[in-house]
Image (tube, rainbow, N blue to C red):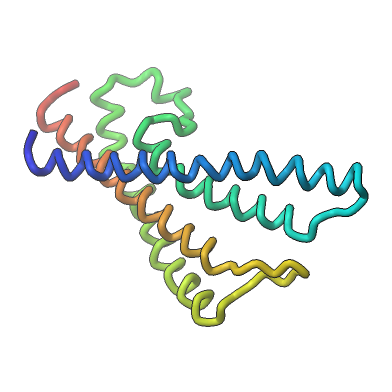
Amino acid sequence: MGPFDRILDKVDSLSVWAGKTASWALVLIMIVVPYDVLRRRILHDPTIWGFEITFMLWGAYFVLVAAWAQQSGTQIAVDVLSGRLSNRIKLILELVFYPTLCLFWLTALIIGGWDFVLSSWQTWEHTQTPFAPPLYPLKTTLIIGFVLLWLQCLAKWIRVVGALFRREV
């Protein structure tokens, strides 16, 4: 294993670690939602924070596990057409579409989101609700998730290039 492969493995490890760590948000969601429902439906004393905390945890979870899903190949794929193609043609399509679609749009989200996050931190942005939790940590999580996904897509694309040149298909 060369140094380049070790770098790609580090990207994989980072994606898996971030995804597994973020998965703990589901445990918190499974605690908050029933508690909030119990307070609202049975005690007739709803929380002012339950919905927003659940919403923020779900958003952080969703964006932080995306790189792990990409790394493990568990993301949703529409293979109605690609299922009929040879492995070599699939790799050629990935060679073209990863940089033009995935990496391009993730780069746009990262660059555009950076100002979004900085502005939120500069103003100490909070939601406009009675609970008013801060938004800047969640917005920061979005950028972190986009960067992790960008790195994972780049690693996948590099592996596709390697597979094509080594003629592993």
